Length: 205
Image 1 (cartoon, rainbow, N blue to C red):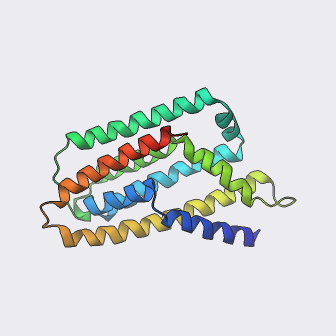
Image 2: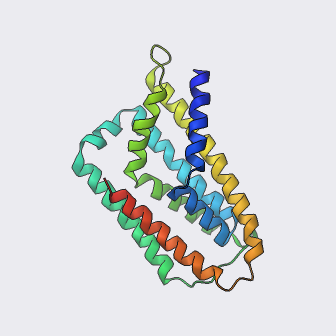
Image 3: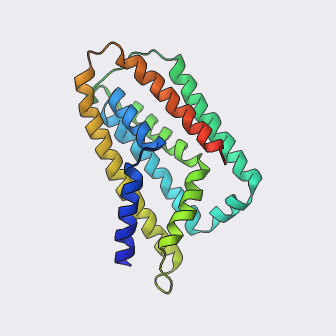
């Protein structure tokens, strides 16, 4: 079981480091606003994984996978939410405030909830867990649901540490570009593109 967890942790690390919508969003938020914002969004994204892990462990993922109407409804809801976030950024001022000291507890909590919502409204995460986690379940060992929760815990821990590292490094790098006149508009449109890109990716079969 230990060997399986170690190999799974290594695979998870490679996945967390590979360019994807989650770590790109953590990166853009951290550079644009500060490390605390990136950590908040990362915490929300990983919290959502608890639900996806439970869905797989309890067998509900198969129901979602085999019910095309339900799956498509979740996809539509997730895409609409992400497009709404992109619209809000589009309508906002392009100016960006840097520095962790500017982060209020209210805005951090709001961004944390955004991370959870983004994760839960993406059924591809559940289907990804359904495809990945059972591959590391060892037959004739602990009950499958216990192993699924252990694997899900390893996935969340490794991903969280990776995202936190990205947030901290990106937040530090932001101090070098405070005086840039072009950076704020570029980051604004980068975030819009990221949200729209995730929305489109969710809808693609």
